[in-house]
Amino acid sequence: MSGTTAAAVRPRRRAAGAGASRWVVLVVLCVSLLLVAVDATVLHVAVPAVTEDLKPGAVELLWIVDVYPLVCASLLILFGTLGDRIGRRRVLLLGYGLFGIASGAAAFAPTAETLILARALLGVGGAMIMPATLSILRQVFPDRRERALAIGIWSAVAAVGAAVGPLLGGFLLEHFWWGAVFLVNIPLMLVSLPVGRILLPESRGGQGGPWDVVGALMAAGGLFGVVLGVKQLGGSVGPASPFTVLPLSAGAALLLLFVRRQRRHPHPLVDLRMFRRPAFSTSVGCIVLAMLALVGLELIAAQYLQLVLGLSPLQTGTRLLPLTIAAMAAGLAGARMLRRFGPRRMVCVGFCLTAAAVLTLTAMGTADNAPLLLSGFVLLGFGLETTLFGAYESMLSEAPAEQAGGAAAIGETSYQLGAGIGIALLGSVMNVAYAPNLRSVPGVPRSASDAAGHSLGEAYDVAGRLGGPAGAALRRAARDSFVHGLHVTLLVSAGLLLLGAVMALRLPRVMQCAEPVAAVELPAPREVAESRVSA
Image (cartoon, rainbow, N blue to C red):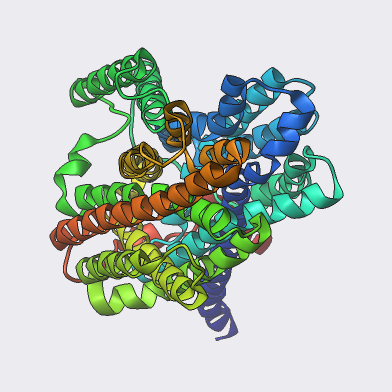
């Protein structure tokens, strides 16, 4: 009788331990994501100190800032699919190690070229970490209800990381030199490596055959060209410049060849048949459109707070904190909302809430209106996170478990591409609406007006050099033109968001939670360890 009772209790204890271990794994994955998210934004406040110390040229400074997201976006599919083949935990731990080494190299970089190389290596490490966290999460949480809650926590951590980056960077710069913004990664990686090795389960996809190295390199090269071209399009070189046309053309050609190769390959890196599923393709499209509408807008909003309202960087970060807090709340409540409303209604309402927030912010003027900004940013953060949560969860749940790494990489690549295109598109809209109003300011020479039309910051510099009534008139005209351009950009962004709401109508109406029983089994290493203890 006692033996029977012990045998019956043992599976229950094992199941309880499995439940506990899943949430511990989530904590480890969230720490990984936090590091990558913080590193994407922590350098922004350190750029003046880096410029003063290393004396980079204009092109070098641009590469110091842009090389990390550029390399990371280019390699997401490569490392996401590699993790499906050789083990997601293995790729994640290698990413930890490379991230720590690159952080040390960046902190003590003696030249701008060394810093660019170190930032590129950080991008490689980030590309190894990002899809691995989502694919392991997909494997560890086979039950969709639990997985929805886990993705909500995961996305809330991402929002925290993006907001904490500039604040952490500002704090470190007040007490240490600029290299400290990179050194903070090293102790966390030293802890994450052994903890991840002990706690994270290993998992692989079920694809047979060799890994398509040529296809992976084609995807990496194609994405590098497209993302680089999009960044150039959003910069000052213009759409007709060879620095924009050549990388865009080469990248698009490589991606077309990659798609053609994947359709014919017996063991493709990415099963393109996933895009035939309306829920998967629509979710990817919603991620692109949400980021396209909002990332460029966020950059313009930061300029508005600092250059129009005259707030300091710390005050600007404080004003934007409600957006982050609202995004965290939406992420934590996302699982319950998804179960109650379903993917279609949740993503559609998220887009509509975000559009309403954007339209609310069109009431911004040259004078500070703190209550308006607070309500607009709270609505913006909640709506955006609701949209991205529903889209990410639907995309990851629709993909087969054995292709979780590739699906996660597609989601992250969509995020990066949407962000890059958004900066280019909304930046162009802003420039078109801003510059013409500065061509006929009384008392201002044409050359000064043309220079002031490049940006509001440059307009202030030109006005300062002119001085007198002409300088004051140019400063007022530039500020008014920027606010006008901001309103036009907000209206375009709202239109894109409403288009996303229409697109979301293709998502499933209800959340399907049925999962194969076999998918809930514990990782093999843990079961082996328990069997040894029992023996």
